[in-house]
Length: 255
Ligand SMILES: [Zn+2]
Image (tube, rainbow, N blue to C red; front, side):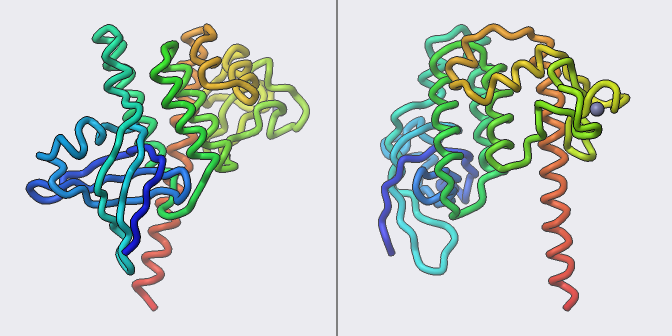
């Protein structure tokens, strides 16, 4: 048995039996972990509101040999989406909590267990902090999707057309969902279209902070186009992952 205390973000919780919960959390130093929080349903003293998705704090947990599940002893919340939402209007607060849950779900889907990924943690921490600081949660969501896929090395090139390799995409682009690439308007027909303001958002996202992105006005139409394109990209990637996992499993069952 070994005790750890890590700066972490809470991703998801599942009810486990009558009184316990399983918590998935992303640590800064040791990657994603899952652990049992004993009596979490009742013990407000130890866990309070800290089980809310995207809560950041210090998680104290015990790892046992040969067991994937750790034991979560305590979560000292430093920053919670609930606290950030409390200063807002009912609608804004609900939207903030919804985005926080979405970010946490994306992280849970993309972060592998037990593999430290400092860049992913830093991105998630910066975005969750910006979420509480005000500004557009929509712009922040598109920024977060862009960077998460970029860190994984799977975000398509945003400067030049993937088909002809010549035309700049600043004039607009089309997502080729099956190829997971962007093409210029001459090379692609049909598919999700991205207007020049949407492409300008992507080009600018590389060198800007989450707070900067959230507080700079963007045309709502451009954010909707990006939402559509990103959801298709994410679905295409996750489906591929799932399919490869299924193939591995099927191969394993027929030696
Ligand atoms: Zn082209």
